[in-house]
Image 1 (cartoon, rainbow, N blue to C red):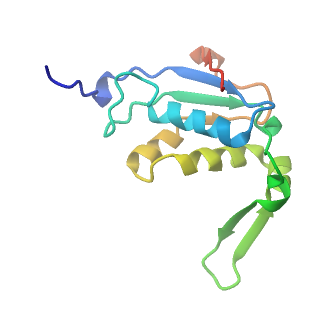
Image 2 (cartoon, rainbow, N blue to C red):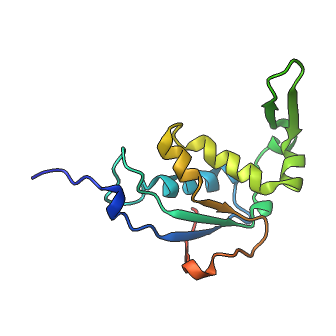
Length: 143
């Protein structure tokens, strides 16, 4: 008996919607990364992008446990001398919660072409509404 290998052309992608309200940011991001990668599917193949589409709603209501709101920073560097920019997660979650969720998920995906294509299937919204009702997304419960 031979091992089944999924092909990119035969993958049927479904849409899932995840409500992040009241759930830890990292735990939600881990579940989203698993779905984007396709590891929840029985026909998962490591070298094929067989993930699904994910819509995350209520990203502004995701919680950070402990003292991460005041101790954790989002850092970026322009490449120039003195070009380091730091933003506390308290500020980031109040101004751009979609970016905080996207960064958390992106860090959990592989750093190759599969990860780059998987992050494009992530749609994050700060509020409870989204514009993908036509795709008929299935609710997914994060444990």
